[in-house]
Image 1 (cartoon, one colour):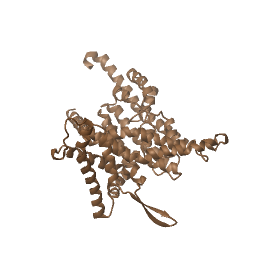
Image 2: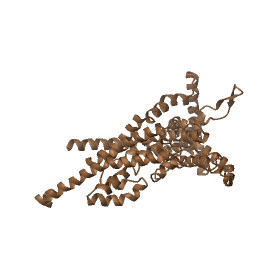
Image 3: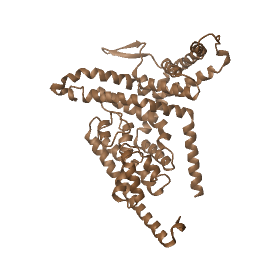
Image 4: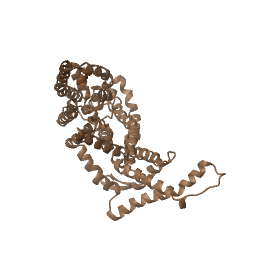
Length: 445
């Protein structure tokens, strides 16, 4: 028991160090704030294809044909959100870094965004009549969309750290008389650090391109983002990520928060790519993305505890389990499961912890297989994580009933996995009752 206690304590300290690292905090907070923007863009795509489209949407009905005229509106919303995801992330990470560095206002977010624009290519190759032309002073959506997330994160963190350091150098400060308004004085004090920050960031990008012949975006994407995407968007990598999350939950640490800095950029980028492909009528590229995690591996919350609740109602003879199950069911429908995780509890409870860890690994594998063979459609819409089961699968896949059936299969499988362990917990209660009868209440306690 002493060794177990030391192990749990060590993991708690590790989790605390990870969560207290300011770069991790900035990234987590920024992506939490960015989520409504992504969901807005995803729903714009959903409406564009399922309502305003004259081929597949409601606009194909004669008396609703007028809806097709609204399609450009949804495309405008989609472009402003999904195709500007990296810029939004850079601005928000810059702001979060500023808060952690005790900087005031939203100017650091703007500075981070401008630094990012300064380092990415502003020319693109265009093919017209089989001839290639170079268009100058334009930015490709490859850099402003999901593909630019990792470079954007690096630039946002690096530029604000540099700006903060420069702002502390007394030699770079411009002192203004006391009669000058505070806002004006603050602007002048930030002038030189701002100039140096943007010039240095741009110079780094220029130097790397001059030395290697490659843009820094291509280097970061090929060396960092693409390999991470290949790992996490593959089934083994996804299962390892989920396993780590579940193990932390078991010792009472919010597992999703631990893996969030790795999970969010990659899985949100994956659903953004799917949304863009769906909007363009192209083949949907990614099986694994953020909605896949939500609709197949965390139904009812982490550990797919909706299955646990159903298993309790079916097979539990323990009054404490059934009471907690009744209290937890309503929030569980909306994928909030802290009441059952800490109330049952699942934390440090080996009997329930085993299926809690195993279940999402099994359901994720089942869903991946059924999606890969085409039975279930791939997710194309980013949905709020609180969307109830079945409805979540239907919306995320733009109305694919195979995905709804797959989610239902996952729920049934989760019940079957949890049920034997619930029955074991019944026997555990009987042993406690026998001990109380033989030795008395006080001796058992």
